[in-house]
Image (cartoon, rainbow, N blue to C red; front, side):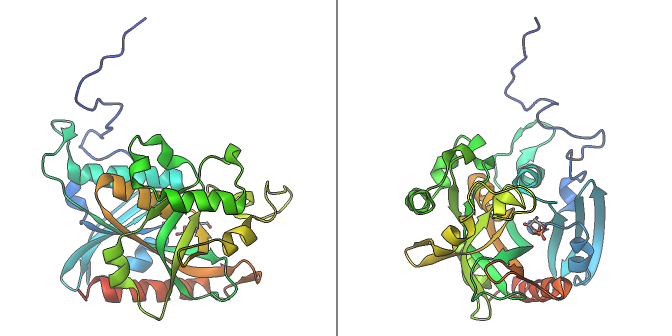
Length: 299
Ligand code: R1P
């Protein structure tokens, strides 16, 4: 049996680079990306966002990962699509971090850390009747109902344990589904991006779209009361406002990697009322305009 060779450097199967030195999935070099990065789920949302840039200087596309980099109000900025789900966030955040914080020649972390800013511009379903379709929700916390973050050794250090325990007890969470995790977003970014025109709260991040978000087509969800339980949970004045599939994973990895993150979502469905936006594209456009007007204006 061949013995695995263990070196201090990240090997070719760990840090995977193309022949031209591009990171594996995103297929880009470090110089192709700015340290302020807008993350969107849908690859087709990338050109919708970059249409607002004064100039787009770089574009790339591999699988569901589309990257545009340009300038807006004198600030260099990138927009990257993540596709759907926490598993994709694992790929995108690690690769974006690697582009800045790993020396690809040495195959080792750089001595000087470059902090990044991630702002998710997503779509989501409201869990509260008073948060209507076409409104905007900023995530003060991400509540992970997926298990991705638990694979990282230091994840317990970034989690809000008291909030988690209260959540488990309130929902009588079935541990077969894994331990829910709660991570705070960047307080500085929340302060910068919050105005009374939008909502803020805890955003639930589910590992799927149907039963994991309490939807029933032909298969019954494990917990038929999931959404009511989520909606009625409160902790020190915070309530769960909405549910989608990326925020908690972005918050967890950003904290572990030393970056700042804030997630903002256009509400396109209201789950308790059973309604869906008549024009989701318009709701997303409103979110983009709201975010970009603040991101480029250092309030
Ligand atoms: C599900 O339809 C997808 O839409 C939401 C969910 O989080 C999930 O990714 O966000 P995006 O519109 O940003 O993809």
